[in-house]
Image (tube, rainbow, N blue to C red; front, side, top):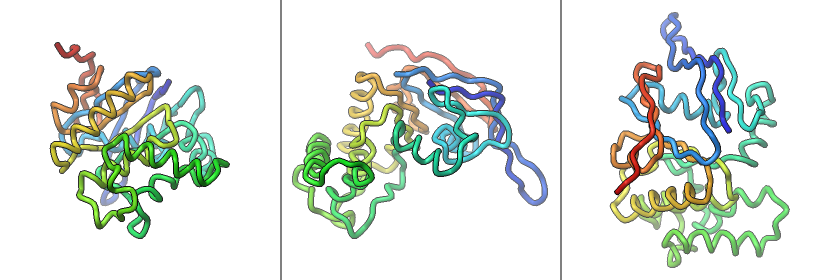
Length: 228
């Protein structure tokens, strides 16, 4: 479970404090599929970054499974993220000189899993995402959609309970877009928590609850109707 308590994030712009996000209280239960929507500059990415332990709030607390993230050191927060969270971004952050398989293995390299087993898990994940013929290709040899699928495989290979995604389908071809969204659906069915920032109404409809932000404030929330 994720909880926000009296959160506010301020930035200093030209000597003036600007509030990018504020919220008195918000709770995301285990297994929820949340879409965060709103216009550009409304605070969506700020909120996602605070939920993921990457951006400390000016005031307030972010709790993940009862752990107050920002009362821990940077190293401790990094360890918590590694244990509990996976991230999917519009910019894939793949290492250009590594193959698809090697990129997916990166999170496993910090574990005690034998190298052969790391390769096996990375291979299984890439095959599952339709990249069986691209295991040994570098990012420059992959399409944009294929690169996003490699990034998604890297996110999922450590079996995170919480997945945070920032515009994960931006600029993707239809096939890769559907692979990403179907994978999110599967993750939700497996009981994982998904929090997805999106501008795309059709992506938001896949979620079970939507949070709408305007000018850094939560202006609406509600359950989504199940698809017929």
